[in-house]
Length: 96
Image 1 (cartoon, rainbow, N blue to C red):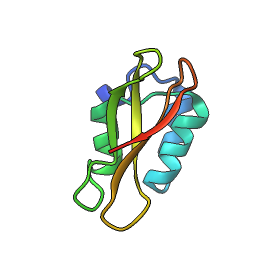
Image 2 (image 1 turned 120 degrees about the vertical axis):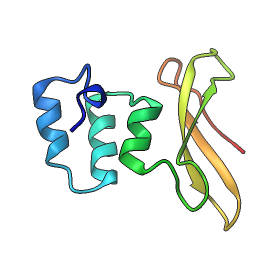
Image 3 (image 1 turned 90 degrees about the vertical axis):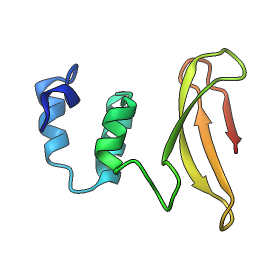
């Protein structure tokens, strides 16, 4: 595991991450641990794409302006949207 990708994580968190068997497990662990992954870390985990779309996008929260990581969702085939939940103020929104 590249040292620059685990910078800031505890030894216990690194050990837990190394036991994950899939992207989904690793992303769930990051969420559980309250770890916000950088764009580079996300790309390393997910390969950076999902069916021609990036899995994550960063945007400013419309309520408080905090930078938030949104996850790709496809509610209907071909309809590209991203779901955001601001950790600072709790605002929840979807945008194209």
